[in-house]
Image (cartoon, rainbow, N blue to C red; front, side, top):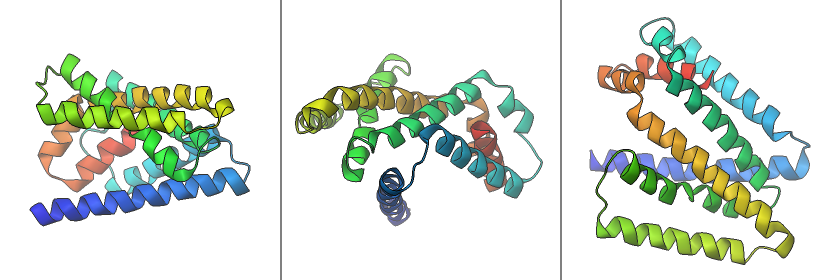
Length: 192
């Protein structure tokens, strides 16, 4: 079980790096509108997952749940912000800007989910905040304010997504069912 988690984490890191390089290349060599790209990529992914999952449970409940819509809108805005960030920063820096969501999730978990933080949580979040301040400090003067606004916006919308995914009633039922198709159906409908 431990090795599986390590391998999944490693795979996610590699995919995250590949995504940041991909969106940086798009911003440099192809005139891509971030909103259109975001809508197309999320909608096509949602349609593919919905088609693979087929008809079944959780479809109607997911679509008519208000938090599903908040999650979907937050994911659209967060991905669009990621695409705007790479027009001001490198792909590596864009990946670091998205990590601003960690302290935002930390605060959200303390405020909304009533979680008790440990000393390690505080230490890790202080390190991330130091990194965030350094990241803004090393940018060129004309890019500091746009990147600060985009970074804070990304943190807000990503943390909203993460907190909703943790508390979403239908999503929790799909996870507990243990059926991969139920999970894909719920995630696909959330992104439609």
